[in-house]
Length: 237
Image (cartoon, rainbow, N blue to C red):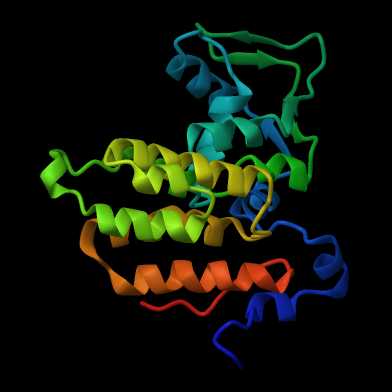
């Protein structure tokens, strides 16, 4: 096996390889969530009491299900999963908050079994980009402009920012460049976890001079020249 081999890609079925389907925790988590939930009067009462609107809502239920399934999602990701569910109850449903009695049946069903690649693409690399956005070393003397320029070099099409002496403008360009790379699928990264690591590697190298992070980013950039989708790479630790 070579240092630039994509082991995960080689293990995928031929249809996934051809279609370049995105591998994502979101779809894995969505598959784990129940297809149908029927709510008892006691459970409805719990949600009503906890809600500031004295109601039972899909997004709150999905948030609880995600937590129980061990998921760690952003607000936007939870909202996307919540849209995959809806209530399927009859018009006679009534809940008496005083007595705790429920008449009729309240059922929540999964209406979307899997998210499309188009829906997942908007989340590619977002966590890593958020790491870049939140990163701040404070005063200018604490920033290593040489390391930032190395990152701009690897990302490409950042010549103007390399000549600029403002580290904040450089960092904004890094974030903007990453957004372009992922929204347009320029680097053909098809694994969401791998995409999120890009921003983390960038911050690790800029802040600490962490060489494995620079090697990983450089290796990934080299793999983009193979004109193949990228699902995994052998990482330096």
